[in-house]
Image (tube, rainbow, N blue to C red; front, side, top):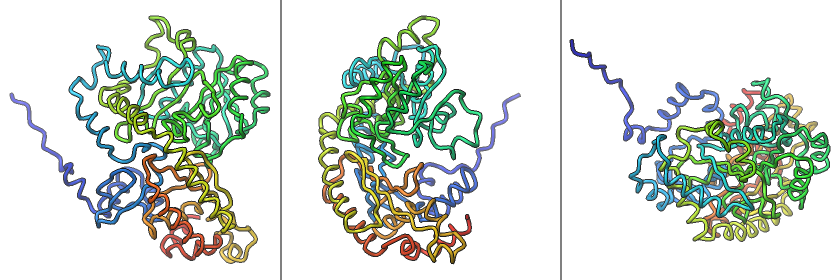
Length: 469
């Protein structure tokens, strides 16, 4: 008796999926992915139908051009759809996944990464996301040290998988999933004395830290902080894990931000722009001393593995990415363009008190806005709604103004919603930087404070937000 053929479901085909209307796309996400995220994104009309992307520019289905100053949270250092990255991926004819062999592209990428990584960092493990890189680094540190305690920083962000979330310094994300990994201590960021105190008993496996806190609000630590951190970890036999998932690959003016202070970590976590904005690719790279003690035996060699980690196409993207960054001197471009942009933004800060702070390094910049006084008339008239909006949605409102009135894409930082991030591709032009500056000048001139921003925002957005309070 022959097998009964299954009926083909009414699938959406690829061509059909790329032609969905805004409403159809919204409905699919609402019904099958995350309804409340759809509601949040649609508050400021962030769900436009984008149909083309190249470099810093994105076009919607009506032919309007937008400038992307969000840059995939730092994942698009080379811009959208870099043709050489796409060509590298498409050129691969090797098996993409074959665990019963040693992948030559993964081996070549690991060698290249070791050549450009600081100090004696040598052995790489490839994964698919930043959170995976952090997970692997934490496991490696514990296995090496024979200790379980991890120290991290308040305001940090290292990912939302279980281990990475355990060392992420915002309670909002940790609380619903507790108990998380035990024996994790959080200390103030930028406070080397607090680290010294946390490590004094020498019971800590590792300290994990970002050279610049991204989701914390683009927080740059005091000068010399990382150097002190390195010395303290060494003195108290704790490994130093530096999370360069967002700061890496030229973003801050150096290939890796820790190089600004000449710091060499024991383990370095990488992702985002590693795959050239085309392929998911992550890695942690460790010194030979750390790797060999943890995994340097036949028994331990397979303690940490990944099915898709280091696959041929992802490795090809990584190889091409490193070549392009060095060939086009993108780190230098980030440093020079960042210096220009920071200088002009600080001029705006001098004109508009609404812009409380401008900070960052290279093309990783945060703009923090002044909070309204909670006792203000508008806050009283709305029963405290304005204060609630200011603490949770002020950055979103500024981002909404930039998107809907100036066609510039930005977003607020996860751990500080009053800060919007500027992380354009490192290939951004000075003309595009100037367009952003003109747009911000116009927004700030019309909106002297939060109340004006509320009034300027659409009635639909405001009504939706108030309903959620």
